[in-house]
Length: 431
Ligand SMILES: [Zn+2]
Image (cartoon, rainbow, N blue to C red):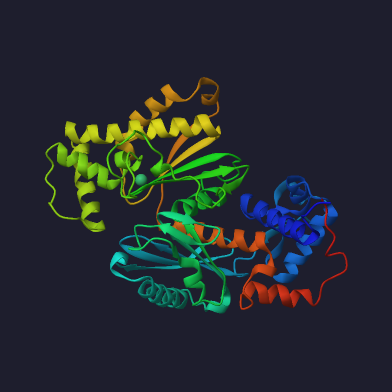
């Protein structure tokens, strides 16, 4: 007998229906839903009825729409943006960004607080976050009661199942159980995820990986990250630590990495490595530890010099492209993705490394895998990770079901209220 009982199947079906509507630009009919999900018309009717009762879906009469409008009125379904909201918090070494996103994925409000987390204890950081969430919600005209959950992204080695940061450049100490800490302050579920995985979820739900079954996302910021999409879902690995592309090893006993190990990809591709290489080529840098803003400014100057034709500076980015190309070729040879999406945020240097990356990838990807492979560059802003945080919370809530939600959660309350008026047939499931 299967260990996956009806409640779990219902959650999966519900998630599939909502996700299919999102992937189809938030406008779809019941029969299209049935075709695309493989669920029977009866099951779709039941799930959709349930979601309309809850307020998650709304119906639009689309009978005037061209040829489709003939005969019976065509009723289209779409997500109700006001059904619920999600708070996103992205913690970096120089700032915390807050966002409030609606159920469709529109960013309703965002806020930005400059910080130096390494100078804060986890408790002080927590106080910053509590205050920042309150301010951002006020800006969006919402209260915590309107929110289903909080998605938090941070850089480093993060166990996304437990929300444990084994190592992160934002904490002076290791093994911080950040989710547990945050959950003591909020009455709604909190989920903590590696920041590159948030970008990957945003690409999967809203961006260049939308609708793809197998894809790789590589993020270029001060560090180098990645996220893997297997069979249409984010792959997290046994401990939720998968896809540490920036810390895959290139050489034995290579240069030291900020993670404490040696020879990592980041020692050739991260901001600290670009600055180090530039210094070796005669670029003057202060002889003291640099903070985030100083490193950003220096990298921008190095980029500007390379753009102006400085050959030594251009070579730094060409070398970066060769290492990225080597790493990406290995990922492609291992995983056979349809698309590799290189996402760059604040550090814009892809135009300087792209040619050498493509050249090496072309040489090193095994021939049969090249046929359908696309490598694309995507520039992203803060809205990308805000949508990623929204995707994380909605994904976790829909996949876990209400039994695992804290009792104060608004989704818990809505679902519990709905439970009292369950309609006949609503528990029908189709396997
Ligand atoms: Zn490393």
